[in-house]
Length: 284
Image (tube, helix red, strand yellow):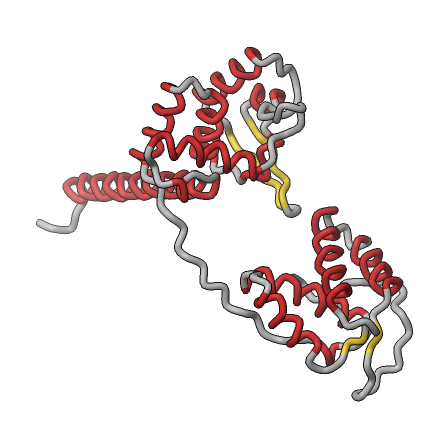
Protein backbone atom coordinates (compact mmCIF):
# COMPACT_ATOMS: atom_id res chain seq x y z
CA UNK A 1 0.00 0.00 0.00
CA UNK A 2 1.32 3.51 -0.77
CA UNK A 3 2.33 5.82 2.04
CA UNK A 4 -0.36 8.44 2.51
CA UNK A 5 1.66 11.35 3.92
CA UNK A 6 2.71 12.51 0.47
CA UNK A 7 -0.74 12.15 -1.03
CA UNK A 8 -3.56 12.88 1.36
CA UNK A 9 -4.42 16.58 1.33
CA UNK A 10 -7.26 17.47 3.71
CA UNK A 11 -7.23 18.96 7.17
CA UNK A 12 -5.43 16.72 9.63
CA UNK A 13 -6.10 16.60 13.35
CA UNK A 14 -3.79 18.97 15.22
CA UNK A 15 -0.99 17.17 17.06
CA UNK A 16 1.86 18.27 19.27
CA UNK A 17 4.13 15.31 18.75
CA UNK A 18 6.49 14.34 21.54
CA UNK A 19 8.70 11.28 21.66
CA UNK A 20 7.04 10.07 24.85
CA UNK A 21 3.45 10.91 23.88
CA UNK A 22 0.90 8.12 23.76
CA UNK A 23 -1.77 8.44 21.07
CA UNK A 24 -5.47 7.91 21.59
CA UNK A 25 -7.15 6.64 18.45
CA UNK A 26 -10.61 8.09 17.92
CA UNK A 27 -13.43 7.25 15.56
CA UNK A 28 -13.39 10.88 14.40
CA UNK A 29 -9.72 10.76 13.36
CA UNK A 30 -10.27 7.48 11.56
CA UNK A 31 -13.28 8.81 9.64
CA UNK A 32 -11.36 11.99 8.74
CA UNK A 33 -8.49 9.88 7.40
CA UNK A 34 -10.85 7.75 5.31
CA UNK A 35 -12.65 10.79 3.95
CA UNK A 36 -9.37 12.40 2.86
CA UNK A 37 -8.17 9.12 1.40
CA UNK A 38 -11.35 8.82 -0.67
CA UNK A 39 -10.65 12.26 -2.17
CA UNK A 40 -7.58 10.78 -3.87
CA UNK A 41 -9.90 9.20 -6.48
CA UNK A 42 -9.40 5.80 -4.91
CA UNK A 43 -11.90 3.10 -5.83
CA UNK A 44 -14.68 2.26 -3.41
CA UNK A 45 -13.09 -1.14 -2.91
CA UNK A 46 -9.79 0.37 -1.80
CA UNK A 47 -11.48 2.73 0.66
CA UNK A 48 -13.52 -0.16 2.07
CA UNK A 49 -10.30 -2.14 2.40
CA UNK A 50 -8.77 0.58 4.59
CA UNK A 51 -11.99 0.95 6.55
CA UNK A 52 -12.12 -2.77 7.42
CA UNK A 53 -8.46 -2.94 8.42
CA UNK A 54 -8.59 0.21 10.54
CA UNK A 55 -11.81 -0.84 12.23
CA UNK A 56 -10.16 -4.12 13.20
CA UNK A 57 -7.15 -2.18 14.51
CA UNK A 58 -9.42 0.08 16.56
CA UNK A 59 -11.41 -2.87 17.94
CA UNK A 60 -8.24 -4.72 18.94
CA UNK A 61 -6.77 -1.79 20.85
CA UNK A 62 -7.02 -1.81 24.67
CA UNK A 63 -10.07 -0.25 26.29
CA UNK A 64 -8.39 3.18 26.48
CA UNK A 65 -7.74 3.02 22.67
CA UNK A 66 -4.17 4.18 23.23
CA UNK A 67 -1.32 3.49 20.82
CA UNK A 68 2.10 3.13 22.44
CA UNK A 69 5.52 1.88 21.48
CA UNK A 70 5.16 -1.83 20.73
CA UNK A 71 1.42 -1.67 20.05
CA UNK A 72 1.74 -2.64 16.38
CA UNK A 73 4.27 -5.32 17.23
CA UNK A 74 1.84 -6.94 19.67
CA UNK A 75 -1.01 -6.55 17.19
CA UNK A 76 0.99 -8.30 14.48
CA UNK A 77 1.70 -11.23 16.82
CA UNK A 78 -1.97 -11.41 17.77
CA UNK A 79 -3.09 -11.52 14.13
CA UNK A 80 -0.64 -14.33 13.37
CA UNK A 81 -1.89 -16.27 16.39
CA UNK A 82 -5.43 -15.93 15.08
CA UNK A 83 -4.40 -17.68 11.87
CA UNK A 84 -3.96 -14.76 9.46
CA UNK A 85 -1.39 -15.32 6.73
CA UNK A 86 1.72 -13.10 6.58
CA UNK A 87 0.28 -11.38 3.50
CA UNK A 88 -2.96 -10.53 5.29
CA UNK A 89 -1.06 -9.29 8.35
CA UNK A 90 1.04 -7.04 6.12
CA UNK A 91 -2.18 -5.57 4.71
CA UNK A 92 -3.50 -4.84 8.22
CA UNK A 93 -0.24 -3.16 9.22
CA UNK A 94 -0.11 -1.13 6.01
CA UNK A 95 -3.47 0.47 6.86
CA UNK A 96 -2.41 1.15 10.46
CA UNK A 97 0.92 2.64 9.34
CA UNK A 98 -0.87 4.91 6.86
CA UNK A 99 -3.22 6.11 9.59
CA UNK A 100 -0.31 6.86 11.96
CA UNK A 101 1.46 8.75 9.20
CA UNK A 102 -1.70 10.79 8.62
CA UNK A 103 -2.05 11.85 12.28
CA UNK A 104 1.65 12.71 12.51
CA UNK A 105 2.89 9.82 14.64
CA UNK A 106 5.22 7.85 12.43
CA UNK A 107 7.31 6.91 15.46
CA UNK A 108 4.74 4.24 16.30
CA UNK A 109 4.78 2.67 12.84
CA UNK A 110 6.06 -0.87 12.42
CA UNK A 111 8.54 -1.22 9.57
CA UNK A 112 9.26 -4.35 7.59
CA UNK A 113 7.15 -6.90 5.78
CA UNK A 114 6.52 -10.48 6.77
CA UNK A 115 7.49 -12.97 4.09
CA UNK A 116 4.53 -14.85 2.74
CA UNK A 117 5.84 -18.24 1.70
CA UNK A 118 3.21 -19.20 -0.82
CA UNK A 119 3.30 -22.61 -2.49
CA UNK A 120 3.93 -22.47 -6.24
CA UNK A 121 0.84 -22.05 -8.36
CA UNK A 122 -0.13 -25.46 -9.76
CA UNK A 123 0.14 -25.86 -13.52
CA UNK A 124 -2.87 -26.87 -15.60
CA UNK A 125 -1.76 -28.68 -18.73
CA UNK A 126 -3.37 -28.21 -22.11
CA UNK A 127 -4.50 -31.83 -22.03
CA UNK A 128 -6.17 -31.35 -18.63
CA UNK A 129 -7.88 -28.20 -19.91
CA UNK A 130 -9.30 -30.03 -22.93
CA UNK A 131 -10.39 -32.90 -20.69
CA UNK A 132 -12.31 -30.42 -18.52
CA UNK A 133 -14.09 -29.07 -21.60
CA UNK A 134 -15.00 -32.58 -22.75
CA UNK A 135 -16.28 -33.47 -19.28
CA UNK A 136 -18.42 -30.33 -19.06
CA UNK A 137 -19.82 -31.05 -22.51
CA UNK A 138 -20.58 -34.69 -21.62
CA UNK A 139 -22.37 -33.58 -18.44
CA UNK A 140 -24.28 -30.84 -20.29
CA UNK A 141 -22.78 -28.12 -18.08
CA UNK A 142 -22.65 -25.32 -20.60
CA UNK A 143 -22.05 -22.47 -18.17
CA UNK A 144 -18.96 -23.99 -16.57
CA UNK A 145 -17.75 -25.07 -20.04
CA UNK A 146 -17.91 -21.47 -21.21
CA UNK A 147 -16.30 -20.14 -18.02
CA UNK A 148 -13.32 -22.46 -18.39
CA UNK A 149 -12.97 -21.64 -22.07
CA UNK A 150 -13.30 -17.90 -21.46
CA UNK A 151 -10.50 -17.68 -18.88
CA UNK A 152 -8.17 -19.96 -20.85
CA UNK A 153 -8.80 -18.19 -24.19
CA UNK A 154 -8.66 -14.56 -23.05
CA UNK A 155 -6.60 -14.43 -19.85
CA UNK A 156 -9.30 -12.50 -18.00
CA UNK A 157 -9.19 -12.14 -14.22
CA UNK A 158 -12.14 -13.46 -12.22
CA UNK A 159 -13.06 -9.94 -11.05
CA UNK A 160 -13.36 -8.86 -14.70
CA UNK A 161 -16.15 -11.36 -15.43
CA UNK A 162 -18.96 -8.72 -15.07
CA UNK A 163 -17.38 -6.92 -18.06
CA UNK A 164 -18.26 -9.90 -20.27
CA UNK A 165 -21.57 -8.46 -21.40
CA UNK A 166 -23.74 -9.28 -24.38
CA UNK A 167 -22.84 -5.92 -25.90
CA UNK A 168 -19.08 -6.46 -25.45
CA UNK A 169 -19.16 -9.96 -26.92
CA UNK A 170 -21.21 -8.76 -29.89
CA UNK A 171 -18.49 -6.20 -30.55
CA UNK A 172 -15.81 -8.82 -29.98
CA UNK A 173 -13.91 -6.69 -27.46
CA UNK A 174 -14.10 -6.60 -23.67
CA UNK A 175 -12.94 -3.38 -22.01
CA UNK A 176 -11.43 -4.03 -18.57
CA UNK A 177 -10.64 -1.16 -16.25
CA UNK A 178 -9.29 -2.83 -13.11
CA UNK A 179 -7.07 -0.79 -10.77
CA UNK A 180 -7.20 2.23 -13.10
CA UNK A 181 -5.49 0.20 -15.85
CA UNK A 182 -7.50 0.01 -19.06
CA UNK A 183 -7.12 -3.04 -21.26
CA UNK A 184 -9.04 -4.30 -24.29
CA UNK A 185 -9.38 -8.07 -24.55
CA UNK A 186 -10.36 -9.60 -27.89
CA UNK A 187 -12.89 -12.42 -27.85
CA UNK A 188 -11.95 -15.23 -30.28
CA UNK A 189 -14.56 -15.82 -32.97
CA UNK A 190 -15.45 -19.38 -31.94
CA UNK A 191 -15.93 -18.37 -28.30
CA UNK A 192 -17.89 -15.29 -29.28
CA UNK A 193 -20.42 -17.43 -31.14
CA UNK A 194 -20.81 -19.85 -28.22
CA UNK A 195 -21.28 -17.04 -25.70
CA UNK A 196 -23.95 -15.32 -27.77
CA UNK A 197 -25.80 -18.61 -28.32
CA UNK A 198 -25.74 -19.23 -24.57
CA UNK A 199 -27.05 -15.72 -23.87
CA UNK A 200 -29.87 -16.15 -26.40
CA UNK A 201 -30.89 -19.56 -25.02
CA UNK A 202 -31.05 -18.13 -21.49
CA UNK A 203 -32.94 -14.94 -22.45
CA UNK A 204 -30.03 -12.65 -21.60
CA UNK A 205 -30.47 -9.75 -23.98
CA UNK A 206 -28.03 -7.32 -22.40
CA UNK A 207 -25.61 -6.91 -19.52
CA UNK A 208 -23.36 -9.59 -17.97
CA UNK A 209 -23.66 -13.00 -19.58
CA UNK A 210 -22.65 -14.97 -16.49
CA UNK A 211 -25.27 -14.41 -13.82
CA UNK A 212 -26.36 -16.04 -10.57
CA UNK A 213 -29.92 -17.23 -10.04
CA UNK A 214 -31.01 -13.82 -8.78
CA UNK A 215 -29.76 -12.13 -11.95
CA UNK A 216 -26.65 -10.55 -10.46
CA UNK A 217 -23.15 -11.10 -11.93
CA UNK A 218 -21.49 -14.27 -10.68
CA UNK A 219 -19.14 -13.75 -7.74
CA UNK A 220 -15.60 -14.99 -8.21
CA UNK A 221 -15.90 -17.41 -5.26
CA UNK A 222 -18.88 -19.03 -7.01
CA UNK A 223 -16.91 -19.19 -10.25
CA UNK A 224 -14.04 -21.04 -8.57
CA UNK A 225 -16.48 -23.36 -6.81
CA UNK A 226 -18.20 -24.55 -10.00
CA UNK A 227 -14.86 -25.10 -11.75
CA UNK A 228 -13.51 -27.07 -8.77
CA UNK A 229 -16.64 -29.24 -8.78
CA UNK A 230 -16.07 -30.08 -12.42
CA UNK A 231 -12.43 -30.92 -11.66
CA UNK A 232 -13.59 -33.53 -9.17
CA UNK A 233 -15.88 -35.10 -11.75
CA UNK A 234 -13.13 -35.00 -14.38
CA UNK A 235 -10.50 -36.45 -11.98
CA UNK A 236 -8.34 -33.34 -12.40
CA UNK A 237 -6.64 -32.04 -9.22
CA UNK A 238 -9.11 -29.54 -7.79
CA UNK A 239 -6.33 -27.10 -6.80
CA UNK A 240 -6.02 -26.47 -10.53
CA UNK A 241 -9.70 -25.58 -10.82
CA UNK A 242 -9.65 -21.80 -10.60
CA UNK A 243 -9.42 -18.77 -12.93
CA UNK A 244 -5.79 -18.13 -11.91
CA UNK A 245 -4.63 -21.49 -13.26
CA UNK A 246 -6.63 -20.97 -16.44
CA UNK A 247 -5.11 -17.52 -16.91
CA UNK A 248 -1.66 -19.01 -16.34
CA UNK A 249 -2.39 -21.57 -19.06
CA UNK A 250 -3.39 -18.71 -21.38
CA UNK A 251 -0.15 -16.84 -20.66
CA UNK A 252 2.07 -19.92 -21.10
CA UNK A 253 0.31 -20.84 -24.35
CA UNK A 254 0.70 -17.31 -25.65
CA UNK A 255 4.38 -17.24 -24.69
CA UNK A 256 4.97 -20.53 -26.52
CA UNK A 257 3.25 -19.26 -29.66
CA UNK A 258 5.16 -15.98 -29.57
CA UNK A 259 8.48 -17.79 -29.14
CA UNK A 260 7.67 -19.99 -32.13
CA UNK A 261 6.82 -16.92 -34.18
CA UNK A 262 10.08 -15.26 -33.12
CA UNK A 263 11.99 -18.36 -34.23
CA UNK A 264 10.23 -18.35 -37.60
CA UNK A 265 11.11 -14.66 -38.05
CA UNK A 266 14.78 -15.35 -37.31
CA UNK A 267 14.81 -18.27 -39.74
CA UNK A 268 13.17 -16.14 -42.45
CA UNK A 269 15.71 -13.35 -41.99
CA UNK A 270 18.59 -15.85 -42.04
CA UNK A 271 17.25 -17.38 -45.27
CA UNK A 272 16.92 -13.93 -46.89
CA UNK A 273 20.49 -13.02 -45.92
CA UNK A 274 21.80 -16.29 -47.36
CA UNK A 275 20.03 -15.62 -50.64
CA UNK A 276 21.46 -12.10 -50.79
CA UNK A 277 24.90 -13.50 -49.98
CA UNK A 278 24.73 -15.79 -52.98
CA UNK A 279 24.07 -12.84 -55.30
CA UNK A 280 26.14 -9.99 -53.84
CA UNK A 281 28.48 -11.64 -51.33
CA UNK A 282 32.16 -10.60 -51.22
CA UNK A 283 33.36 -14.20 -51.51
CA UNK A 284 34.86 -15.14 -54.87
